[in-house]
Length: 161
Image (cartoon, rainbow, N blue to C red; front, top):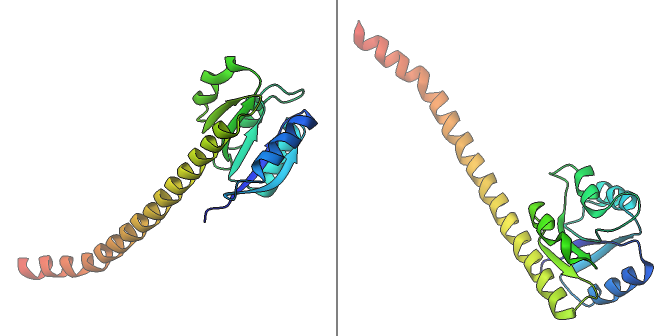
């Protein structure tokens, strides 16, 4: 079973507790951190390398979009925005969010968002395995060509004499 390392980021303690109580019941998730602001979120991502982040948008200091900008793309986990504002939904998908949930959290909607994240994680992992296999095949072909090149040169030189 897939177990996504997950962090929760929200400046409201009640929202974090509600999210935590909801997410604890989902076996595909392992909650590794709760952050009360964007700075803590960036630090948690750099330290813990989570697979998934439930991220509020409107927070003092760094907002959710600024958090994403602060994290290098290769370190950025999948993001599910969880916010009270519908108006940021299009912006969220511009930064490749897995999903966008409007508070208050609806459990069915939350489960759907998690299932999307699990599916994307498995797809990305499968693509990574295919990429590794492809790179291995390219390396093998390259070394075979390198080994044959001197033999071909000898044959060419031998036939012209």
